[in-house]
Length: 304
Picture (cartoon, rainbow, N blue to C red):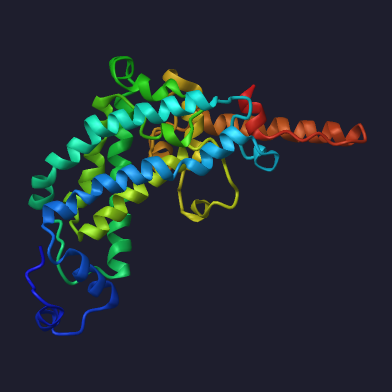
């Protein structure tokens, strides 16, 4: 709860006029407890889990011709009943694990210093903190994910997430309850190391889940803005990990590709990409010699 009764008090405390964003924040949060504000995280996650995947689910079910060439595994299709079952299982996990975890984790949020007051963070501050959060989460997630692919970790926990060898957006948070708890640690490390404002924390939670939905979408869109992020993995990169399945020792990283490259856990993926490019070249050359053309994509080859 903000320690000001009026906007003038807040302005006097800051020694300047409030920005428009700060005025809106005051009007919304001034009479709400910090705990109540933090619990908004539950609503945010529910919205992201339920709404963000919907366009991708529509493409999966509608099978629109113009988008089919972007599907990574075009022969792998889920029915509407299978899609709904996935969402139902995710919501069960949300209400019994994710939601309660957010409620009881408030003391740790206070302990690390996530604040709700003024001043609001600048755009550059938010960008810098989010960059740290993504890098820290990616590195720590890499090692936990790699551990979950040992015999015990996979059979007891991680195999649930790999039930979808051709993932969809709703399957991003689909996992064993223990994995949900374990992978919550990397998401918390960044804010613990570089605590910021609650608004930055909300942005982090939302963007990280949106990123996970995008990498599990099953579609590789060439116009995606994430294509311009250095070392970003994306849907095609992570889809290979699901496609190989339980024996996969490639592409463990959650966001970026540098860990897999440094520690040599992308060799199978890179070899397959080179093989695909070679086969595509041979097929293209053969088609030209026969007076026609034959187009084949990595996605087509992967699905066979």
